[in-house]
Each structure stands twice: as structure tokens, then as C-alpha cells.
Amino acid sequence: MQIANYASNQMLFSFNRWGGGQAGNCDIGIGNYPDNVTNTDWKFTQSATNYVTKNLYIFVRLTNAPIIAANTNVIAPVIVTHPASRTNFQNSAAILATLASGTAPITYQWRKGGTNIATQTNAWLTFASVQFTNAGNYDVIASNTAGVATSLVAVLSVTNPPPPTGYDAWAAQITGTNTAYNQSATGDGYANLLKYATGSSPTNSDNRAQMKSTQTNGLFALKFSHNTNATDLILYVEGAYTTTNDAPWVGIATNNHGSWGTTTNVSEDTGTDPATDVVWDTDATATNRFLRLRVTRP
Image (tube, rainbow, N blue to C red; front, side, top):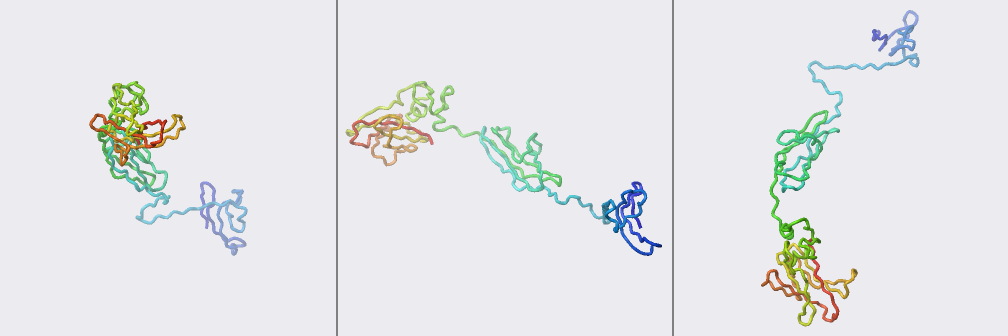
């Protein structure tokens, strides 16, 4: 018995009884003898080292049975992390993100209102500066060769940012670009943050940021204007015996977000606008002392 590819002169499988009168030596063979001409019928396992072997694949399909994919290791995507709805202020940054399990590679396609967004094929969707036109319903489709999965819809809402407060509201009145803390918007040499702390105008020069010295109960004191509405600041009154850069400045009193706390060496007159604060030195023995006001915004 032989199974052959006749057109290619290839023997695939054979079972022969050979020898004298074909009465003995049953054997099975596969493949062709090397010369492929004179001995094409002799392919027996007893001479296997002399033959070129071939692989024979037999595929069986049951009647009415479904076709099974050849590669059963590919797993279709499943959305593990859905993008979350969020609300952003206009001009703020936003990101929507997803994660799908399944056999790699997995590709993503973001959609807005069911329409594909061009070039947005990562697992995340970013907005550097959200605008009202970006508001809407977003979802993402994850896919590989085995199938697709669609995420739940995430709603991106956009609202107006809250009005500026504190220093930001004060600096918003500045005409020009010198709005940084250490700049002087009015050109009078006083830093903007100090002018804000002392109730100075953001548009006109005045003397409210000027420190004054006085004496209280025989003690040296620092007198200055204080914007009591500047609750986003911390004020430090400090003293030192020299004014060098490495001078050991020592804290005398601290105003934390508008409150002097339980400090007893401070007098604050809120009958004026801005208020007038007097902070006297706590070193009663000091005969040569420097005081300063340091302003920070956490």
C-alpha cells in the first residue's frame, strides 16, 4: 500500500511485504529514496538513514462542527480600567485613561460622542489646556486579532475657574507683566509680595511698604502697615545683631495666615486701613539690634 504525491513524484507513506515472493519482511516507510528515480518504491524503515523523510498532516472536521481557530492562544481584550468622568476648570490639564487585558498587541481608539478622534490611539487621552469645546462623552475601543472591547462612557465637564483670591487677585490689577513676588510692578523698589502684605496699591507707588522704627515700653520695635485680609501669607518679624548674609536672624513674632496667635509683644491697630502693627524686640538687653519683616506665601 502506498500513498504518494504522484505529480511531484513524492512518496508520503508505504506499507510493503518484500523479499522472495513477498512472503516476509513486512515494513513501513515514509519519504523518497535519495536518487528519487530508480528506487522510488523502496522507503522502508530498515534503511531509514538513506531516505529523505516527509511530514504528513491529516485534518479532520466533524460534520456540522464549527471551525476552530488555528491559534487558540489569542485572548480577546477585556476593559479592566474604564475611563473615569471628571470636571475640570477651563485652561487646566486633564487626562482620561484606560487599561485592557488580553493578548498583545492591543490597539486603542478614543472616541468623542461615538466618533473616532484622529491620532488618539494610546491607552490615555490628554488635554494640555481644557476648553469648553472639549466637554463631552468619551469612550475607547481596545482591539487585537481576537476581538474588540468598548469601555464605558466617561463624561468630561468644563467649568469656569473660581475668581482669583489673595495675592492673585491683588496681582491681577497690575498693568504689565511684572506680577512675580519679587518684582516691583510700580517701580518703587518694593517687592510685590511685600506691597501686598502691607496693603500697598498694585498700580501706584506709596510708602506703605516702608518699615519704621519706634520704641514701646523702652524696647526697640518695628512698625509697619499690615493688610489683615492677606490671610494667604505668613509674616515673620526677626531680629539680628548684624545685617550680613549669614547673620543669625532670630524669630520675634509670627503672623500665621492673619493671626498673631498668643504673641504678647505685638500691638495691632485695626482702626486704620491697612492696620498698623507694632512688634517690639524681646531682647531687653539689646543696645544695637536690627529688625526685619520677612513675608512668605506657602
